[in-house]
Every structure is written in structure tokens, then in C-alpha cells.
Image (cartoon, rainbow, N blue to C red; front, side, top):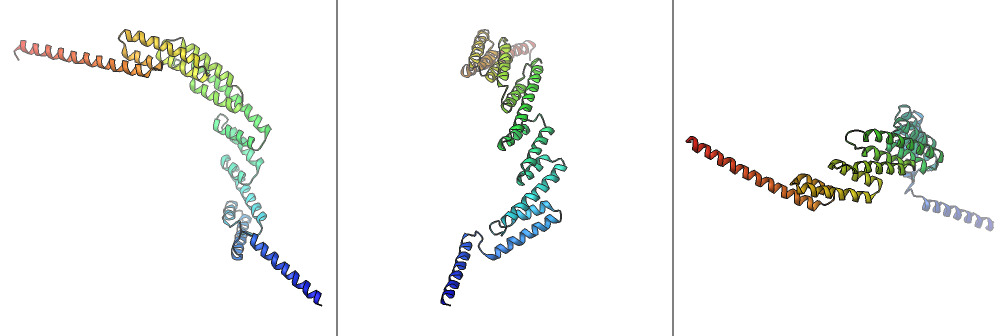
Length: 302
């Protein structure tokens, strides 16, 4: 009898200790808050059953996750409702929004499908394609990553075709198209050597000209090609042309060539000298005009 009593007391103490341990480990302050969280979860489930997935997800995210009794049930509800909302957005053709909801649902396959649809919708948009590539890289989907890098390479080819057309125009300025091709090469992980070669070729063509606009463009093309030595040659040529025009008294043109040469100090000095000469010439003209006007008035007896 005594032994049974002792055993009973030991079990009771053990249960009390267990209860004490559970309460100590729980992040929920008290049972009232736990009951409230569980009630909110039931309310969210009722909204889901009523076909109100967006409202159900919102209700599920507002409850105190530290107090809900069944965290797995709570998490499953959020994923189901987020996926349901994602499906609604997809039907409406709102693929970016659908992607966000599928991400919340942790549905990798659905989210990946939305990235592909976004690329299909805007195949020539660098930002759209780059985000899709980043997504598949993060999710270690090598097949989709490879397909999109191939797509980027195709867009690089198109950009180079457009560059050819633009450079053939009067302005000879295809830097925008060349820059686009460079951007695509980054995401294609190929073709950068071709872009640089094209830029160098354009630089060579324009460096043979004497016009200020073309020499300026040549510098930009050589910069895009990563050829500082050729940039230096263009600047030296511009400096020679600047001196030639300066010796002819063509200060404004000389100043522009000095600027191309990278000699801003000389450009400013020549520009100020030119302005001073022009002002002096204008003052002389005004004095001559006033003298002639005075002589005329005197001759006419005014």
C-alpha cells in the first residue's frame, strides 16, 4: 500500500514537471492567447471553405503564430490559399502577381512556369529575362537556366543586327544598340568578345575622320572595346587638330578639339581668349559705328 502511494506521488510529480516544461518552452504567454489564435485559424479555414482564398490568407497571416496550437495546419492553410490566389491571378494573365503568390505558397514549379510566361510576354526585355534567369539559378534548375541563356544569346544576335543598321545611318551612332548587345552577353554568358570586336571596328572607322562629333564617338567606341591605347591615339589626333585651328584663329573649334583631347584647361583658356577677342572686336565695331553715325549727323547739320 505504501509502495503504491509513493509511486502515485512520483507519477503526479512527473506529470507536473512535464507540464511545467511545456509551458516554459512555449512562446505563447497564456492560454487565452492560444485559444484566440486557434479561433482565428478556424475563421481563416472557414473563409477558405467559402472560396475566399485571399481573405483566408490574410486572416492566417494576422494570427499569432507563436500561440497557434497546430503550426503545421496553419502553414498548410497559408500555402493552399496562396496557391489558390496565384491560380486566380494566372487566369487573369497577371503573371507577375501570380508569381508572387506562388512564391508565398512555396510552389517552385508554378512560380517557374510564371517566369517562363513573363519571358514569353516580353521576350526582348532584359530585366524580365534576367529575373527569370536569377530565379532558375537560385532554384538550381539547370535546364531552364540553359534555355534562357540561349534566349539571351539570340537577343544579342538581334541587337548586333540592329547595331549594323544604326551605324550605317548618317549619325554613325549605334552605341545604344551595342550597349544592349553587351547587356545580353552578360546574361548569355557568351558573345562579349564579339561585342568588343564590333566596338573596336566602329572606333577604327570613326578615328579616321577629322570631324569633332566622329572623334568623340570614336573615343566612346574604343572605351566600349576596352582599348585605352586607341583612345590615346584619338586624343593625340584631336590635340593636333586643335592646334591647327587655334593657329588660324578659330578658337571655338580649337576649344572643342582640346576638350576631345582631354585637355580641359587648354580648352577653357582658348575659349576665354576667343570670347575676349570677340568682345574686343564688338567694342571696336560699336565705336566705329557711333563715330560714323556722329560724322553723318554733323554733315547733315543735326
